Length: 98
Image 1: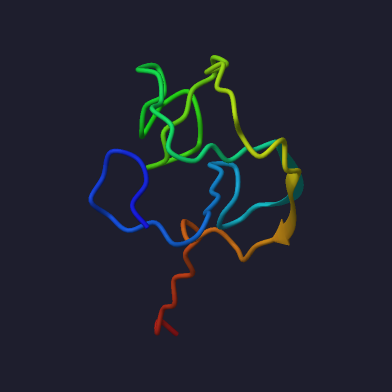
Image 2: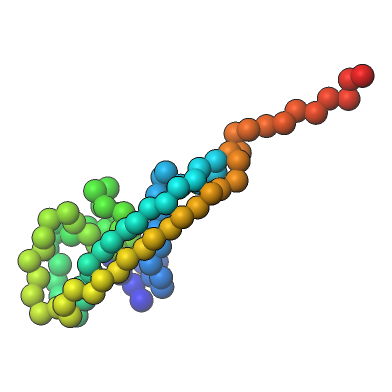
């Protein structure tokens, strides 16, 4: 399936957050209310790789697109907890000096 303004195939939702990664721990809850609109022309403010959202290749906006005829809201929640490995910036130096 091809979604957005890219020739890359889209086959799964992905999620990333800059506060997660090496040397971090915590939890986050992301709640979404998506709705499917078949055969719709999206308004111009819905754009792929929108810096105001985390939708990546998917067209998105922070403005209500005022679409009609969709499936109705579908709850889509993500909860993640993590405690990740030490930061890769930490280095151990070994010496053979006696």
